[in-house]
Length: 234
Image 1 (cartoon, helix red, strand yellow):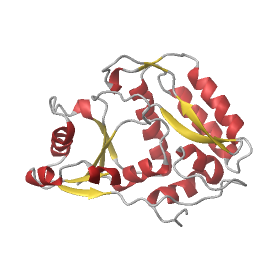
Image 2 (cartoon, rainbow, N blue to C red; image 1 turned 30 degrees about the horizontal axis):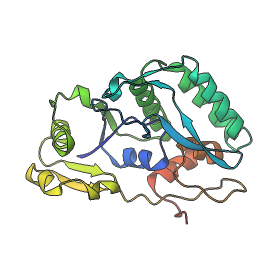
Image 3 (cartoon, rainbow, N blue to C red; image 1 turned 120 degrees about the horizontal axis):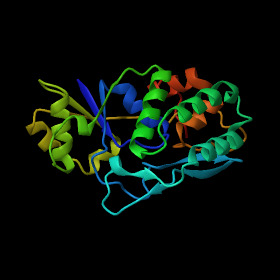
């Protein structure tokens, strides 16, 4: 059983969905402190050939959990859809992608950041054909541990025997692998090489929201990019 854990980010990049594609179970980490300036409520897109942040407006209190963060503007969904339409209306797959993406946006509650982002990630994953089982950390009742101890408790609560934990490549720099091994958990790391796809006349920009790929190459090709069967971007 391969377990991945991550915050419910806003329209995340291809590498996030690659992690979902690799995992048997994907746990949304919501019962932790919200980090200002993180990808939990913002992501980059391309607008007129230039990178632009697409940020969800939030009410933030110091020390607040991700699960408790609410939106500050009730009309933000319409504004974001309008901006995405402006940015990508000339993209090849726009006619196929925009109506379904708009339907997804409008079908979810616009109050809670975690709930909205989680539902959207699950809906996009389903459309891409990804089969991971989704859980929330709050469903697993692992107590108040922090750091590696919390991750270990979450992994252990998802699977018996000798589970495996799938970490992002950045985890090599701060996770204590010995602690995981002592708990009977093998640690693996994603090795996602960002794929290159046609972004038009601009130099290729990696790390954008998955919507950039969806609008440009469509659902089927984006699913292929997410699974890793691709040419690596320079």
